[in-house]
Length: 403
Picture (cartoon, rainbow, N blue to C red):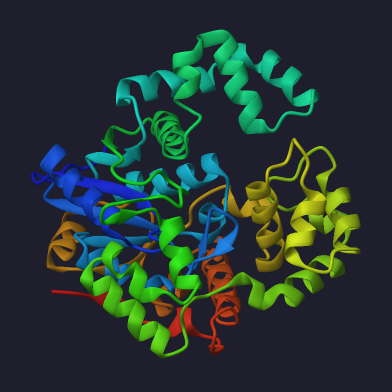
């Protein structure tokens, strides 16, 4: 059981890549829905689940989140931030639960209710779908497609539809993670408003993160202004002026290909999400591909999605191995306001709380190695911005405290 504060606390797991009007609305809706006094955000660092770098650094995005309504921002560690839906959810829910003071877990959903999403979570976890799932996988279907079809055949169309949409897919995994941890956090679904996840379509003053990233990447920050909270736009304008926006993995294209070409089949086999001899396909394709897009396309099959391939390639470049996502080692604070400070004083965390490099000296070695992996990855992120950044950003950046 978590140690409850008399003032309710809700957690949100997010990437905020970038933080836009829809995210600010989600925080406001969460406060309204469950009467939360405190909002905790567990946010991806400088890399995201689609197998790419974040468009802006995590410290800037932390400031955006705090300005947009969050009270406390914690980091989702690299191996979880770059994992598939189940790994991503396991890390985020694990941190929220380990904080020891979270009452609700709030997430966006495209349709349905928490009840139907819970039914979908139970269906996905049901061992009776496994024979059908294995059969469909053997027929060459991707895991996501095979699982949806297996659920459809056993539980029907309504439940299967719940796991077809991106936000719903993550919501199902959040609920499954809550169940696995036997956590007493209550899942709260907030109906998504405006553009769909990953959609290029725009609805009034809300656009998806995908659409906003596209505008920024195309040098049209002023066009994106209407979809960003004022302080977020101002922060992006400053980053752009300083040559720190947008970060782009393709600036490290040759370095990524070099890393892949230098790895053995055995090393590739230790990467997350490798199965059925996929390391052999990656090994061969890495020796002929002359661009990242060519590499992704040559590895991809019906069974392996582009997103999964991108995550594997990014893991290879950053040095993430399968065992790195087996457990959480600490809770890292990126930023907070006065309400966040008060929340931390009432929390009873079950993992070490850290906010600086110096504090990692007291961590067990395995946990400290996790932090050093994050530092290494962030040093590489500094090569992806228009103006290259020196090493050490992660170790020298200070905790962000806002009034």
